[in-house]
Amino acid sequence: AQKITQTQPGMFVQEKEAVTLDCTYDTSDPSYGLFWYKQPSSGEMIFLIYQGSYDQQNATEGRYSLNFQKARKSANLVISASQLGDSAMYFCAMREGIDTGNQFYFGTGTSLTVIP
Amino acid sequence: DVKVTQSSRYLVKRTGEKVFLECVQDMDHENMFWYRQDPGLGLRLIYFSYDVKMKEKGDIPEGYSVSREKKERFSLILESASTNQTSMYLCASSSTPSPIREKLFFGSGTQLSVL
Image (tube, rainbow over all chains, first blue to last red; front, side):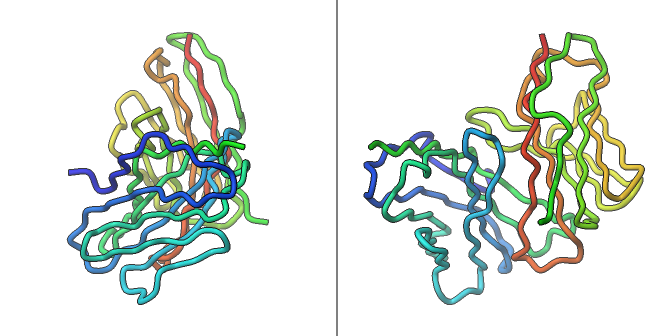
């Protein structure tokens, strides 16, 4: 089974609107971390936001927030007030607490295009 | 500013050539990783290393080998490049032990084309 599933290969959003990028995960470990990365066309992977499995509140970082629904095993990224510079690939990733190899599991990514 | 540096941003090689992709990090990290990124497949782990001269196979090690002679440097080797190895290659590093919240630090990637 896939550890991380991103079901939206591509998304479009109007500039200044909000957009939600979906991510579901699969783990039996009670301790895990969820990450979102942005990859613009330049290729670098930019860390956006982190959510721990024991965190009581949803993570927020500026215009980014994470809609964490633990029972549903989902960790959707919400980008508010979209900007043209938000056009990029977005990857959801998970790290499990039991994994001594420090391996990260990545989804297949969502390509976001912001329309002027 | 912490850095993971990959030696080439773009690389074009011929089928059958031996190819070296180099990665250097300046964060004194123990763990280093090589990922391959293909459209629709996301990032797939090729090899990782948790110490000098140590290596572990990831999900898709076939056709690749790695070398870690120094802590800061992790090389990916394509012994005999093939066209199906045309891809974006990403190097990453992390420290250990580390809290679960510690992220991976990535290089800028190498887009390899094998003709």
